[in-house]
Every structure is written in C-alpha cells, then in structure tokens.
Image 1: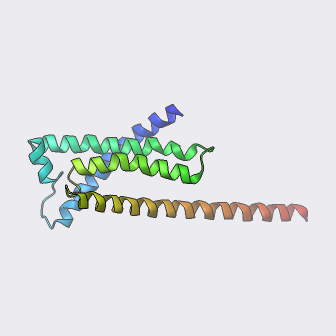
Image 2: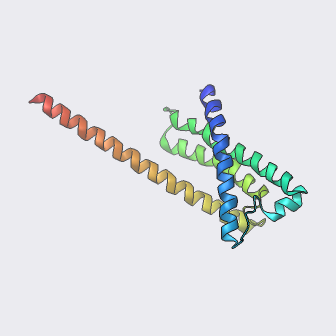
Image 3: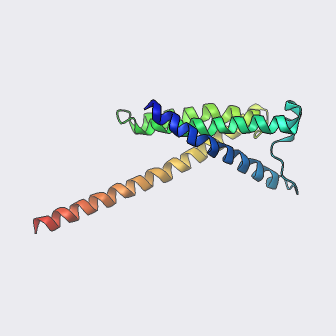
Length: 156
C-alpha cells in the first residue's frame, strides 16, 4: 500500500501544479485583468518577488496534488465503510487545501474568508463525491442486470 501511496503522489504532484495554474488563470479572468498573474499580488509582496511567490505556490500546489492523489488509497481500504473513507479523505484534503489556499491568498485572510472557502471546498467535494457515487451505483446496477440476464439465459 505504501508503494501505491508514493506512486500516486508522484503522479498527483504535476496535476496539482496544473490545478494551481488553472486557479491563477481563473483568478486573472475573474478579476477582469488583461494580463495573467501567476499568483496573487499579496503573495508576491509577502514573498518579496514574483519569482519567489510563484515558486512557493508551485511547491504548495505540487504538495496539494500529491496529497490528494496519494490519499486516494483510502478508497481501497475495504474494511472501512464508505462514511469513514469519505470523512478521512475530506479531512485529509481540507488539511492541505485550506492552508495552501490561505498561503497562496486564494481566500480573504479573515474568519469569514476561511469559512466561506471551507464551505466552497465542502460543496465541491460533496458534488464530486455524489457524481462518483451515482456513477458507481449505475455500474453496479448494470453489472447486476447483466448477471441476471446471463443467469436467465443459462437457465434456458
């Protein structure tokens, strides 16, 4: 299992960097800018340069991707129920996502900003979880239907 965690984390890191780039791109569009800002100006000021800020953000996004991907092995622990798996994966994701978002200035630095970002994260997490759950449920139903049909055809 450790090997799977490390392998997935290694594959997830570049995906995290891509996600960070998309967040920066979306942020530039959302702010109505005519230029691409690789990271928030407040992060640039805190880091001392655009290069340092972008390097920090890239490192944090790689960590974000690695943790989400490596943590996905939680879903393979069959002795845990779906509720436990979901709660653990959510807590793991939130534990890395919220500090990354805070440091990268993707949220306002206030209690309201943190709570709003947490609510958005939870809503996105729940939406993705529900879509994946419904897709898995549909697959199980299709397999059961196919198995019943095969069993019925075999009985004839």
